[in-house]
Image 1: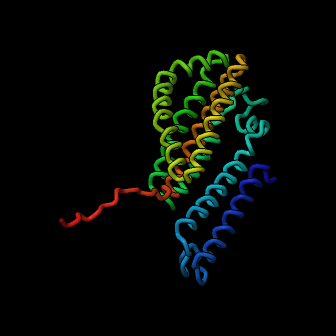
Image 2: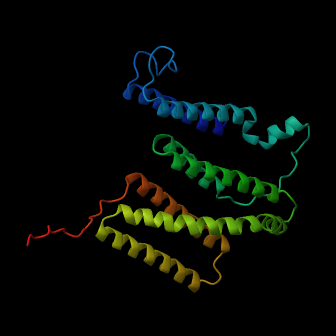
Length: 257
């Protein structure tokens, strides 16, 4: 019997494969190149084609992996371990790192096409996600008390996270905002700056009026705000700066006596 995860990932694999073949033929592929992975003809745009083929292969592998383990079904796990019931697992805390990893993968894909700087941003995001996600997974299983696990994780990571995040915020947020302002028109830059100031002020007022607001909510707001600045700055850098008018002094030839 095919499991739900297998159906999901197999469908994604088929969709990515069809997209790769279609992309290959619409970007210059000929003969059976897109169908034969370039063995019998051209595949068109190689970068996009390889990305889609990679997605298809990854989804296919995940589908086979999940169907092999029966989606971690408790009955199948108990049968594999030779016990009546599988051992209980400690509950894990919700994590937003997979969402950030999505931004990193998107930056990698865009960087392959647009700019090496965007590619490096994606590499940096994925590196941070790998470290933070691994630490959270370790802390969630350190003890049987979620509060103790959270304190243990904070004790290890906060001395690293606080200065690094502060340095990145000091560098990335003004840089991203400046790129957006430089790529906008004169009037547009004024409106953009006004909107940014209004949003920052509104969030600050909201946090001040809600003193019992969860720290996780505040951290999420700050995180997505920083990512928005970075994404806007990268996009504006790709678009380029607007044309500036240079007003120089007019030189008058010396009059003869």
